[in-house]
Image (cartoon, rainbow, N blue to C red; front, side, top):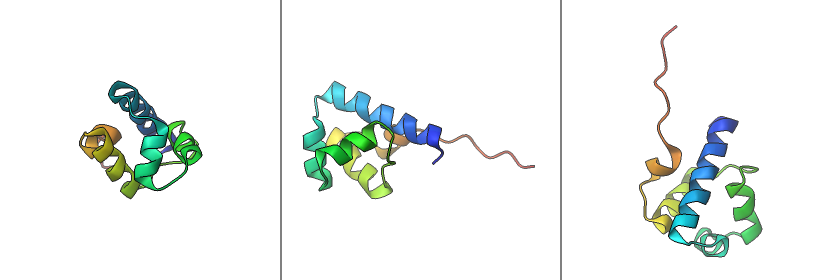
Length: 77
């Protein structure tokens, strides 16, 4: 992921957490990390791993692709 894409993922996770009223602590417990670690990920300072995104998607009850969006197709040179 590029930095911009990582920030977009973090923004989407934050938005879904707010809509679903899921706290950072709830997500931290599900991920097995500290609340501070979740905070670093939801602000984009540290990227989510693929396995973490799978857990986040499950907690937020959305498909993983909702969190990561779709990447534009590569254009042949």
